[in-house]
Each structure stands twice: as structure tokens, then as C-alpha cells.
Length: 446
Image (cartoon, helix red, strand yellow):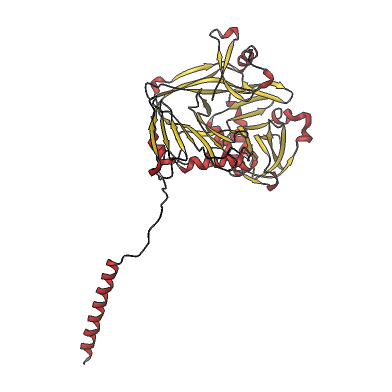
């Protein structure tokens, strides 16, 4: 057999082997066995996901300057402030409560400085998730405001105070990476552009600050977009094959998989998702865990549909509330249409998830108008004349919005109002028609 015949023979063998292997690959069927059960994983996205830093924000900033006070809830100013705060490094926290003693209010309000106020008490641990706090010994500290004194020497170590107004505690922290000149120029020196506020001392340990002049705020009307129960059914239930729908004669809808249930009210604008199997153990957990679990739960189905921010943590019910904010102002409603609320049990299982089933879409420019609200001085005079108000139990007061929904159309109106926090609850202040008579009433809000 000569050389050329050998080459031809080998080439033929290789071609045959190639064809056999190709045929084997095409016809191969692996024995994967039988999968006994599969878990349904929802890919439904209702709205969007959000970072913790975009949800944990102050709702007011006070600037104390040369014996005068200026305040704002403007979202641009608040975001600029938080950019600075997140760039700093807080170190060596130490308890100054006893050292401050009777000068408690002076340290917070009566020295030149900036007061960054959060809507509810927070754990330092929560702040560590959005800021640079280098101190492992202080996770048990809670606070609702940060005070930055502004008469500190640029050569000295700059300090800030973490203050719990409720507990009357003050912790001092040293700040590094602090550009005094930049912060002073960009935020503190221009504070006079904001409305001037007056101080109203409730008692020796408690003051509130309110605008000294009447305030003009826009009344805004929006077109809203509605979500269906089906959208949330697919997003919240694990296995769709077990979910049954029941429509009541009243118009209410119920969805249940035999373990959890979801209720849609008759107007189709409110959802309540419940876990009856959750334990009733009310062992008080940390606010940080409750808040973070709530954020993660909503992120799991991309449930942020509007400009919600963290608003309140309740240690008794283990609940976190996220409220709608518009132009930096909180939005309230009598039936809870402007907030999402989650409660948890002592075993890290959720009990209830309550939220609106619509979102604001487009503002209607032709229906926007300006509302003038009375000054803080008039508000305080009216509160003193309302029999149901105990002035010692007035915790705060602020301009807010009230959400009013037109159930015959897709319109939602956001109405400027004065609100007062009295005995732990927020109320709308309703002024008498003749405001000069200094009369009015209050109605509790959700």
C-alpha cells in the first residue's frame, strides 16, 4: 500500500467518525430524572427598586444664625445637605447627655449651627448603612436629628451631635473629611434665603420652630394610574397555581393560596396582604432590622411606585411606615392612601403589608393654584384655643399635604394643610372660616 492510499484510508475513517459523533450529539437525551416540585419565582415588577439612602432622609433642616432661625423642607436643599453628610466620617462617639445637663436646648437650638431633622427616631445602625460612622460600640443609640455647630475653629477637630429629642440624649462625634469652608459657603451662609422661623418653647426640654410669616404652597391635581389586584397577585404569591380569587358582592376582591391572603377594597385603591400564620410574638426587635426588612420586602417586587420616604417606626407593633412626599412635604390621608405600612412578628415573618393601588402620573397645570396658609404664630394661638389639645402634648407642627382622591375619575388632588403632632398622632388643623376669631378643630390623620 503506497503513501497516497494510506492517507485516503485515514481521511475516510476520520470522516466516518465525525459523522457518528455528530449524529450522537444530535440524538443524545440525558436522563435528568423527574423533578418532584418547582418553585414559582415571580418576575413581575410593579414599580422600581430603591436604595436605602434614597428612602432614609431628613424632612426638615433648621439653620440657627446670629440669634435668628431659618427653616426649609425643600427637597433640593435636603439632598444637597445629605451629599455633604454622606461624605463625612463620624468617629469616637461619646455620651454628652450628663455634661450638657440643663443646657440641652441651648446646644441644639441656641448656638449657630445646622439642625438636620429626621421624621422618626432612627438607630445609629440604620445610619451606618447610608453614612460613614466608624464606631462599633454605639449600635444601641437612637436619634432623630444631627446638629452641626458652625462656630468651630477650622483648626480644631470638628464635631457633630446625634440627638434624641424623645430620650433627651446627646452623643458627640468627631467629623473627619469635613470641608468647613465649602459647607459654610454652599449651605450655611445662604440659609437666609429660606423662610424665617420663630421658636415656640413647649416646656424647658422641648421647642418647636414655625414660619414667622404666612406660607404660600401650591395645590396640585394629578392624573393617577391604577394597578389591578392581578398585578400584585403575580408579584406577591409564590405559586400561582394555588391562588384562588373571590369577588364579593360589595366589590371587594380576595386572593388566597391557603396560607396568605390579599384583600382589595371595593374602590380598588387599597391593598392589604396578610400572613395569618405569622407568630403573635411581639418581642421588640431593633428599628434597624424592621426598617431594612421592610425595604427589602418592597424591593423584592419593585414596589416603589411614587416618591415614598421612611416616615415612622413603631416599636410596639413592629411596623415601618413609608409616606408619600411631594416637594419635600409629607402627604397625609384619612384612610391611609398616602402611605405603605408593614408590620412584623417576633420571628422575622411579616404580618401585614398595606399600601395604595395607584400612583400619581401627570400634574394638571390648569388645575394648579396657590394656597396661603397662616403663620406659625396664628397656628399656635389657634391650638391654644382648641379644647381637645393639651399644649404640653404638642410634639411638632408642620406644613404638609392632604391627599384627596376623586373616585369618579382618575384625578388626585394634593391640598396644602397645617398638621400638628399631638400625643403621638398627626392631626389636620381645620381653621374656622373667620380666622381672626382664632378658632378651629383637629382631625386625626393616617
